[in-house]
Length: 578
Image 1: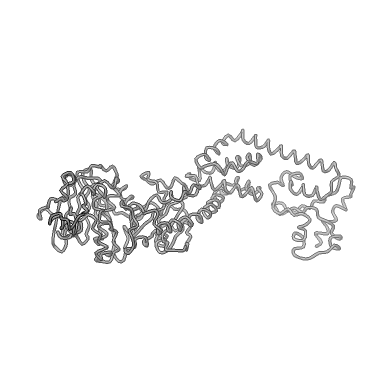
Image 2: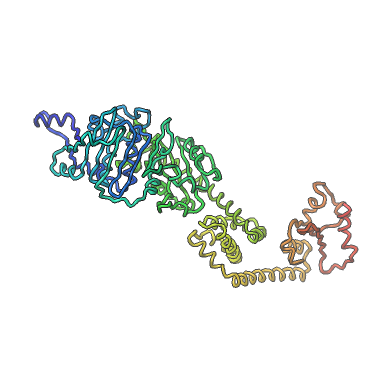
């Protein structure tokens, strides 16, 4: 590979003199740090080759993976011998500074530092390149041992071995064969398709009027290989990129369009269960990837925000920030091109935008999951009947419990008993005034905790004991009020809160119990009434309508009052008359 040293090289060739007292040299050993040992994964290496094919205006890239070699062929514009020497073999060649920020057909190029081709040596010792441009064919073989020999000899230059013209096996584009693999691939073609698909948003799509298709062992890489879209339950989208994702995602997903300040495009989603973010190959998809010009520029982004809330375990997303890669600004990527420079103001701005949106999604997600959990739980008739007996505050806590149960990676058949056990656990903790314990349980602990309530006989005996104990306390309270000759208003309120005191069946038949303050609505509708009216019909202490539509009117009298049946019926007759 060529070493460009400009004027200092010429001065050195002319002989070191006092006119040029200092000089800087670049040792070939720098290649070890720039790229030869830079990458460790085969998908990352393939990504660099695919990126080069994109920059060459290729519309199709074929990758053949075997146990002994990897061959990458594209139908791009190819290279002449001059191109190979001036660009491919020139380490650090920056095409964008040569007014080549766009490909000949108008694509925004991905290459910037000019070291991507070195990544091929991360996995192999031999790289053979065949290329054809304008009917001119070229070919060479690069040998890592030979490069390292040149480094040890401090020769400063390396001369690849040419490939004879009659051996060049391509009529268009470029073919790269990677062999003498040091890192044997155990990844299957389907696994490579999925991992490559997640590194490029452009694969399988038409961009600026040009297709960009990639095949691995004859199978196309598609959007479905990314696994994101079919796993997302709730989807928040931003800008044009978000709209494209919404079109690819299942239409049954709940979709929320968002507008935020700044150049923010893409999507963030949450899944139904944290287990859904384990891919078919055991990759962890719980992340927000940053994409620049259609290629992943930053992974493991989510962990940078320190989000330890439960919702963060359900998040996946992809944010496009092409504005980070401005040809007129400093390069935003680290040397490995696998992450962004953290303290750059542009990156800090992006982090701020994402973090703000994550906090908004956190609040929305909690409400959505709770709502869906309730809907699922109420499919169980016994749970629905129980839920309707709870007060407002207790219903709120029950919703949170149902939301947590619903997030478990189980089908409804297996969730159904957990909802039932949840009711039993809820009732027990309610009596202990310890409902907050349920909300503190993690998903890992929750199923086991609720399953402990599976022994119905013991549990129901305990539950009925607690219920009976509570009802006896109410009866004792009622008896105490009667013995004390309490006011009718006190007894009225106690009976209203505990209708089972009058008839045990009423506790389940409740539809529309009303007290004296509701007489206007129950009897007169919205008509006004005055004291004379009330004096005529008499006071209705409790009017109660049972589930069959039958009305029950309860007239309360203090223990010391003696009355006749005719007096008791008078309020009823008056109500019927009106």
